[in-house]
Length: 237
View: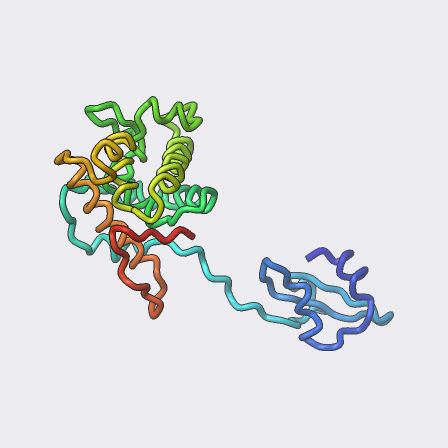
């Protein structure tokens, strides 16, 4: 906390700890300070010297919710899920969380798609030519503003933009969103707004949904487990 600002904003003697609450702001921090002989309050977020004493102790801020990777590792694989590299998952988790927050997506959904699509391998390339963490086709990547499809951040952002488009096209129909991500929105429309009759797509959709539910369970704090998510319900943060 800037001492000059503190002196200008509160030149009087402290009225009590409650009067200091205004200084905590959106970023929680401890409040240290003292009042000098002239009645001027000196504040800091740490003990500058022995004259400073603790006025207010902030509780630790909760960390952004991320999956319990250890718990996920204990879960058995379901269906044809790409082998996951735990080290890569931990490496890219902050970036995935950043992109999820940037585009207003549930981070668990991104993790589920990446788990099935690439197993967190940024160098993954499918026989059909899909590339990277989100397995973007070059045409899709170009359409959604990806310049370097191999760059993990751009790949994630392109996949997130595509997901936002599909969520708007198929509102509250996660099964169709995932089917379109796998086979293309045109294939879903041609199938009469149903999952296309492709073996890969029909296996892909339940695999991602299963992983999504597991990731959601892993990121939920104990005691606040939500109702089970069906394949037609998507909660976006």
